[in-house]
Amino acid sequence: MSTIVEVNKIKQRVSSSFPVRRMDYKFQQMPKYWCNNEPTFTHYFTGMSTLFPEGEAFFVRSVRALRHKIKDNPQLDRDISAFIGQEAMHSKEHHAFHLSAQQHGLDPQSLEHITGIVIKTFERIFPKKWNLLVTVGLEHYTAALVVEMMKNVNELMNDDTIRNLWLWHSVEESEHKAVAFDLYENLYGQGLDAYIPRIALFTFSLILITLLSNSYQLILMARDHQLLNIKSWLKFSSFMTQSIRALMPQFLSFYRFDFHPNNHDESELVQKVKAQLGIDNIKIALSN
Ligand SMILES: [Fe+2]
Ligand SMILES: [Fe+2]
Image (cartoon, rainbow, N blue to C red; front, side):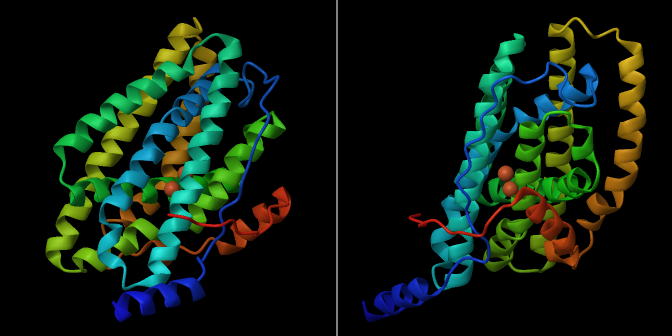
């Protein structure tokens, strides 16, 4: 009993390594093609956005399912609370973005629904360890993507509110990129038996997210009667080629035996974007 009291006292003294920010973006009148003035770009990023509400709710469930096992690590426990707070806020704001995007009649919300079905199907079949590993893998995927978003991709967005949404999300993905990984290492160690499932589930997650985001782009292009817009596809394929070239070394680094998310340091870039957004570091109460 006294040990529990001691742990609770320590927890009260420890604060998370990063804050949870309450955001409430107003997406009222958004341009139809808010990314690079192009349907291909806009529908690719809208499609990706529709993965977030259900995807990030899954990340939260996968971490929550195992966090009780690290209660003797108060710092990681507080960081998990902040991770949950940030991801919940991302889900809420991206969902609000989709509600507003309905104004152009392409029903992005229906894609959120499909994402939910796909995720819950795997979640039911997979053991808790694998679900956590899907989160670990996709957190690395996201951490790599947001570097490109903060460096230059955000400049393609011709709506300030939407650009700020993606930049704020990018900052926070970078802030919490190591949380799921640290939970995994705490629970399963750094040996070969932890490494092999880690890279297997990362490969699976990479294939799944690529299939989903590309399919969603095609669906939105079809709904928008833009499937045969060759000029737009050509612009997008050259953007994609450059992006894959930039992202590949980051993705491949996950296959290193000694990989850790903090091996990549983008703190300077994050600091610059935080200053640009005027994001403060006020913390809110973390209740779970
Ligand atoms: Fe997120
Ligand atoms: Fe995340």
